[in-house]
Length: 300
Length: 312
Image (cartoon, rainbow over all chains, first blue to last red):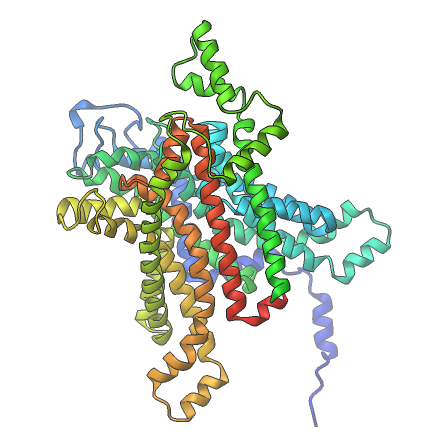
């Protein structure tokens, strides 16, 4: 005799009496705990953020004050990462620079994600001419690969840290707009969206209450995966002299300073790059883990 | 296929129109008066008849004394005929500067593309064939590091080791030797992307029934892989390689500065730093048009390789 697939009365009672529904955040955290890469990335990122936040307590040196008696010292017990041409402690500058590089990356990402999500939502939800026009605009932005778009924005607005964030943010818009539009196109076909419309709910509320929640998971995943790119583009522009300016300890600007000492003082250009690499690697590992946990389809 | 081609061509033309509109707008989006901004950078901001004459002259040279629609039509007419204006800094035509720099950028991009594809495919296939071994883990970790590594830092490290310490390659120059380090710098990140894709694609194909049938027939494993699995597994890799071309072109903008190589990337960076707007507009237009056209052909090649795409 075949076994019934329907739940027994006991099982039904247990399902009904379950008090706490599993929350989104708890589910995600549980899945991330099973991913060693994501755990490693999270630990490294937490350490980086804490060290940057506590820089004045942790470091005995000032990132900007010069010490002409300690110029170009190789790594030693007083200066673990050595000193630069002005005798400034490189480790201290990297730790303080973390504040700038992480903030620039996060703000740029917030600009790109917010504008991109807004464009994608409107485009996908309203369709028609609005969709055609907005997607044409996104296609035009996509015609300028990565850093070229950021370079164009910097050339218009001028060289400045605030403009750098805006430039990197603009270069992030297309990826979010495309992703959100695709998600909205499929979400708005759901029956509950039609049901909400039938009840007479205004379109803007249907969009905000019933379509927007579908977009949150993919946007979180893409944001995490894009943070590394934002940090690399921002430090790349600073490296070119189009972002943070000396004596700022921004990592890209520090690398640019170290270029002239490549032949003998290897430490000046090496450690800021390691800082970028470790940060981006940590963020990417978390992004990969979140993608596996929240949106396995993206992984495929 | 004809309707697919027509659809893609219309889309290409509308995007090209948008690109021209955006590059044209650069001068008009600058906060304040672009002529004053440019003259200010040249130290021409002093008062007097001479500076007023210089102001009027530059304004006329940039065509800013005409109505906006006329300016745009003139910009397009000139661009189609290869006239992208004159550099404010060097007074040379933008087109001649671009024509001088472009070959170097294309050579660098092509060389890094070879490294990206060959290294990426070899590592990806090796990882897939050694699935769940240390080889697989090692290659995937390396590809993750390659993706996270900023090209401008990798370039400096390679210069430090191979040019200054070991003296294997020249620090700068235009010969083949001076191309090796920039090409590796630019190609390694892309190789990570291709390796991950090739691995995933081959693993998926190896699960197909026709591969099992080929093995059941008693075919040698090498033949199963090369004749049956790889041919299908590499289709998405071909598309990704095409898309990587644009990314490599964009990456060249930074790598050229690291290695002090001439190229349109360096031309653009110098133009942005010196606020040479005609040069910025010209280089951005040429780079974006090139990128869009390469993507157009990648789309077509994908549709040719996989007929299902034509009906999407």
